[in-house]
Image (cartoon, rainbow, N blue to C red):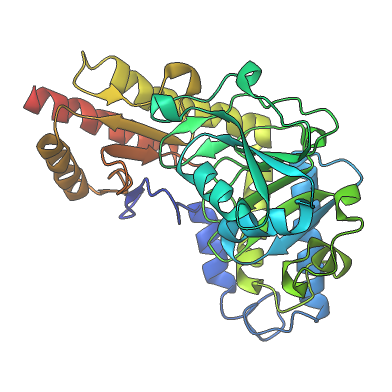
Length: 362
């Protein structure tokens, strides 16, 4: 690790060291053109090639079938919360949302500005510490789409499998677990994800949308909020977030070089098992927040006996080089985000610290 911190931030999050080093080498001059990638025109052949290659890398890693468009948009996943109902929630139709926590609630709140919203299932009664069972999800008969949040970054609950929505398009916010495991893209009408967790730095949002969903979109939607405009222009309608797309390109190559998503999934399981085992074998000193069947493989949330002890944990961990272990301000507690780029060694170091802290404070 050298003098780099053990980065468990929830987002913006850790990036692979080799990717950062490559970006550092190419910062001033990109591929011998005498300019930084940040300085070139998005209409240049160099950027168009980068744009195409990045789309292709994503298609290969996720095995995206024909009939889907890959878009690179701006505004984060939060902009998608509004763009989805603007584009797809027609009069007489209903947006069916599975309410699993803070981010699902934000998506529902935005959708209510544009039309009727139906709560297809909710785990609020359990403080969002579990994912609703698939048989609990009741799709509205007039549903325009079903929306789920794949992984709740704040609470730490994650879908292990997705509902079969039949002919109703399934739209999934995968911001915090995209590319952490293989998924069958053909099951989804649309997948979207902010980049700043598993894809790259903040500034670009990836949208994977089935082409039939882009037909006959309302003409009343502002131009920049229409998926069809971005699809027709290959994500080049306006100036794209060039450097962020470049970084996504490097991260996708890094994932490919790891061996692809099946290999990455096993590495992630090995990492998170280390920490969950440290929690479960602590004789109650550490208390996992989420029902074991719904535990996230990306965001591990846990508590100590009281807030004072948690503050001490944060203070001592920071002194040891750990960052990002404080829980979200809305829920408190502790959280370790173990995204793809977090090394196994960092998780090993954390579990060692957790055991030392337990022995010193039991």
